[in-house]
Length: 110
Ligand SMILES: [Zn+2]
Image (cartoon, rainbow, N blue to C red):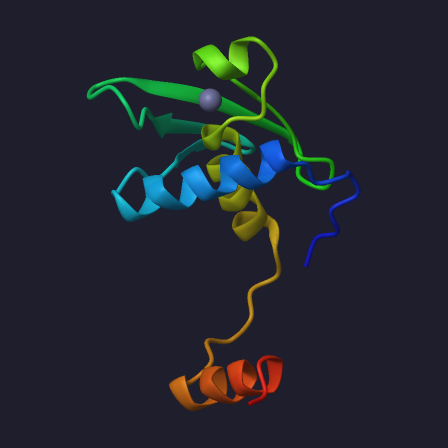
């Protein structure tokens, strides 16, 4: 588990929402090196951007896309930070469907 130590803004939330849309469309980030990802463009075929994750806890990353080039937190950075978080987080054993259902029921009691 990692702790986020920076304020979350609507820009971050929108980037994560757009990143989720990209994942559903099959645009997954590809690890190139520790903290360095290639993320396909969600707009242009055969275009990919490079994202360097500098600090997961502070959501610090850079991206070579037009938005990232002007310092905005973009969907590519959100995708790469999620992937980097998964990469560096301790692995837990997979839960059974019944365990997941029990956890969801506990979080959202009727
Ligand atoms: Zn970007």
